[in-house]
Length: 454
Image (cartoon, rainbow, N blue to C red; front, side, top):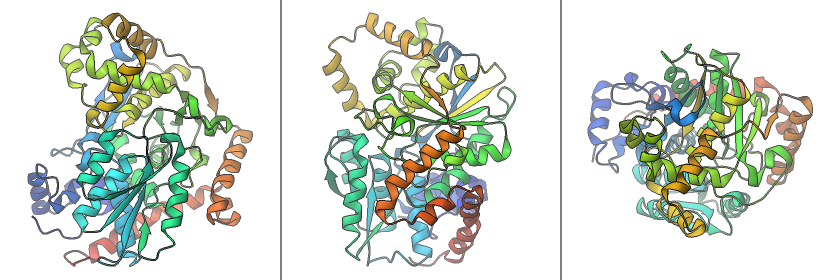
C-alpha cells in the first residue's frame, strides 16, 4: 500500500497535471488496486492524458442537431463521481478538526452512489462508516458499500423517500461519536462540483460545435452536480441550467412526492445546497423511459446500429451509463428541442456512474414488462430517444417559480434547525460566491497537512 500525502486539493482534482509528478504517476499505477489509498489522487474527471472522460452522442441516437456531450463518471475511483463530494466533505472536516481519526464514525446519508463513495473514501482514509439509505435500492449498491467496509442502516422506501434517511441521520448525529457527511446540506459538495465538474464541463466542449455551452442539464439528487452550472455561467453567461426530475416525483415542479425508479435523483425536497438562483428550467422525465433506455443502450446495440449509429460506438456505450445517466441524456435531448438548438450548440450532461450497478434493475424490468423482443426495443428506441418531446418543461426564471422553490426549501429545512435568516441569505448570489471562494482556503489547509498523519 502506498503512503498517501494526505489527499488532493480541489485544484488538483480539477487539474491533476498540478499534482506532484511522482504522486500522480504512483496513483495512476495504483488504479488497478482500488483499495490503495493513493487512489485519492485519481479523484478527477480526467484521464491519464489529462483529457476529460466524455462522449459526444451520435445524432442518430439523439435525433437532434445540437451536440449532446456526456461527462462519464464511471472512471472515478469506486465507479462514480459521487466519490468527489464524499472526499471533499470528509477532508474539509479533517482540516477543520471537526472529524478526528480513531474518534469519529462517519455517517453517509444516500440513495447509493454517495454512500458507495463514503464507504470507499472511509476505507482509504481508515474511518469507520455507516451508510444510511432506503431499503429498496439495487442489490449491487448494497453489495459494494459492504465490500468497502461500511455498515448499512436502511430506512423504509425507495429513491424518493430519502427524507427518511435525513431524519435517521439526525437521530444518529445525537451520538457525539458520529459525524455526518451530509451531501444534501453541506457545501463541500457544492464546492467540488462548481470547481471540479464545472471546469470539466467547460473543457469538454472545446473543439465541439462553437466551443460553448448552450445548456447544462442534470437531475438533482443532492443538487451538488447542478453547482457545475454556476461555473459554466461565469464562462458562458448565455448558458441555461436545467434541473431534471422524475415525472412521478415532481417536487420542484409542483410539490409532487410520488415513487419512482430513477436511482440517484428526485428526493421529495429542494436540497439545501441547491442554488435556486441559477436554475433556469425544470424538466420532467418519466422513470420508465430511463430504465427502458438503459436496456436499449446496454442490451441492444444492434438496434442503434440499424438506425445508423456506428457499430463500434454502439458497442462502446454498453457500459457507460446507469439509469440516472439515461435520465440526463433524455433531459439533454428534451432541452435541445425546447431551446431550438442547432448544430453549433452544445448541451452538456452527466453520467454519474456506469452500468455495473444496475443489472438487477434490468432484470426487474424484464419481470415487469414480460416482452423485450427486438420489435419491442425498436419501438422503445423510437419513442424514448427519437420521439422525446419538449413537454413538461417549466421556466424557473419566473419570479413566482423562484418564490415557490424558496418556499419549498424553507418547508424542507427549517425543521432541521436551519434559521430563516440563513435560508434568506441563500437568495443572494453573494452567498454562493462566498462559499465557493472557500475552495482556496481549504486548498491551503490541505497543503499544510501534506505528509502529516490524519
